Amino acid sequence: EAGVAQSPRYKIIEKRQSVAFWCNPISGHATLYWYQQILGQGPKLLIQFQNNGVVDDSQLPKDRFSAERLKGVDSTLKIQPAKLEDSAVYLCASSLVRRGKVGELFFGEGSRLTVL
Amino acid sequence: QKEVEQNSGPLSVPEGAIASLNCTYSDRGSQSFFWYRQYSGKSPELIMFIYSNGDKEDGRFTAQLNKASQYVSLLIRDSQPSDSATYLCAVDSSYKLIFGSGTRLLVRP
Image 1: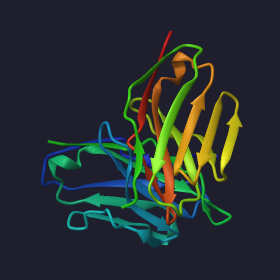
Image 2: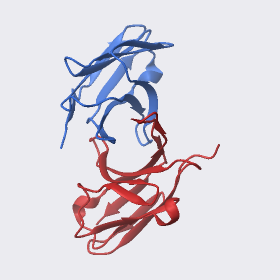
Image 3: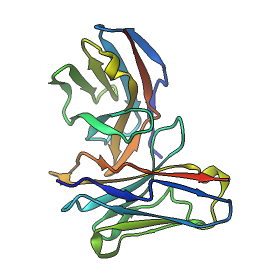
């Protein structure tokens, strides 16, 4: 079974530039998550999709971050304009919902962003 | 924002010892609890999940859940140097998975 695919793996940009990350979840996984992990911290949920609908985006900085999941499959996370504090690893994960409970999250390898 | 709290460590144990990692959470409605291991520069990978009060064992790993006290723990028996990593506790809150900041474990040869 193919895992969660993410690209690019690494990206270096200057502040105020834009960047986009792509994620393709495991086939059949209806739930897709984008997490931000700053060095030395745990993953912080940015946005959660169920199929192509948003379940939660309460911690997404909507003035600069946007995300979409067209057709309920792959997803794109965009940052425009980037700030220095956006330097982090952006993790995409997908899961099944098991009997009404949150199921195991499978993570991609992550996209490491450095903002100079 | 519901919280998940972990001691950042590092927790240092000798090889062969039992490592005990703890986590507390604030949402009394949480039903799903996970332990992930994260090696430096890698993505988190699932170690165990637990849904019910009590203990759940899988090989050298035991997860313990006490919903009344709102804590979940992970025991690692016969710790190996390869177990050295950051251990992340994750708890569901209204179908969102909230992670703690992780406990760094060092297993000394």
